[in-house]
Length: 461
Image (cartoon, rainbow, N blue to C red):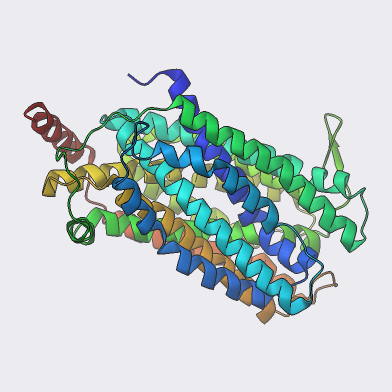
């Protein structure tokens, strides 16, 4: 039985991870173009190169974690030893050095690459914990729900308060050096919170599920089993497509508000006497709606199955995303309403994906007798990074294609492109995701049979 304390502790891990990940997804492209001073196309290329390369580092971390043996378990030690490096490197990713333009590009490549490597080093083992905390699929659904709920809570708080913190630390100045200082100091606050949350996750969680084989299989057997795992391939494609949908919408949001809605990012809206930036309020509201989607995911999937719940959510998100293109810059009420509805759909699919990855680990052990939890879960992080790599690279390149120039009044073609980033382009990702998940074969009845068989084998060890 998983205690409430442990469920919350597990949720703390993704809360920490998501606080930084949302800064990367929502603000990093904008930071590099409008604050750091890079060209949009150059940023897009950097994201593609660093994230694609780093994506293939994730399975390496999974392989290492599967072969790690400590008194704390296989996966928890990575939370303990990488929490501080994760925070420190994250801070320097948002630091603007007084370098030449060429040297700043090199600095961006180095710091962002290091950040993604450390992110893999801590997030792949964290994700793998789900597969070893409990053998019960229902427990995993609950843990996955806690994970995603806390992830969205962390994202909500970060997105709601980040720009106000930037404004505070910059003294509400529009001088670029003051803005750079404001961004740096605001990220320090987030980084401290992330480190503490990862350490609490380590302290509160436990690893319980032991593999049927006492000895880890050779690496070539792990890789062979993975490549033959049909459900894993399907989830890889669905995950990349879902992150393509998310990354394009998220990465374009600040541009949408600054250049289409024409929001002054240094202006504030007072809500309950809290000075909030309109785009930050929009993003935070999306995270709150994501939480509602997470809460709905478990009861819906328990009733109609994970596959049908996932497909239904993505089909609705497709239709709503296309509607988004027709909104005018003054239609703020409808902009916020569609944001809520789309975010509910998006929030509901990710706990299902994490739970299905755990099911893939069971399926692999059922078929082969070999359990490679870390390697299988590393694919989730790999798909996440590949989806973000493709989505953000496309956003950067297309911004350049549509004639975007930072901190200038944009022409009609550029504005039209920015509107498509919030609507038509994300819909391509949702459609692809539905196509992939349609072929997912692990039904609830099939999983019950697999779970019973694995329990029977473990009793005979």
